[in-house]
Length: 175
Image (cartoon, rainbow, N blue to C red; front, side):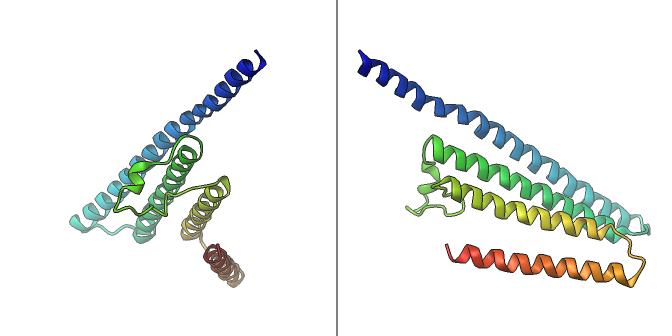
């Protein structure tokens, strides 16, 4: 009798992993939403460029506004990629390997291949770092500098980000 109870309990416990499908599905919904919003942002930015040049208008800080719009869209795309990685990783870790990713001439898709929670965390954290870098440069583009000290702070912060990205890339190559 206790073996039957144990078997039923373990079967139910193992089946409970399917609750992860909620995170997978809503992660994909989030990714699609972010990609859609980012695409509309790029479209709006491109339309603004076209209309400005078509009408021969001159707008103050036009280039900064265009670059800010594109960088904002890149930021949203990167966050969408985080959501995709999250969804694929959870699915592969808790539910099943994604067969379609492996059908491409027998090669495993290394971008989406996730075999442990540490791998998932590592891939997501690298994309999040890139989101932070893009966000930083977007904010820098909208900042007005009034003195040499502020420009020096900007140079130091860009150097710090560059050094951090260099070391992050070195860590990724040694795995």
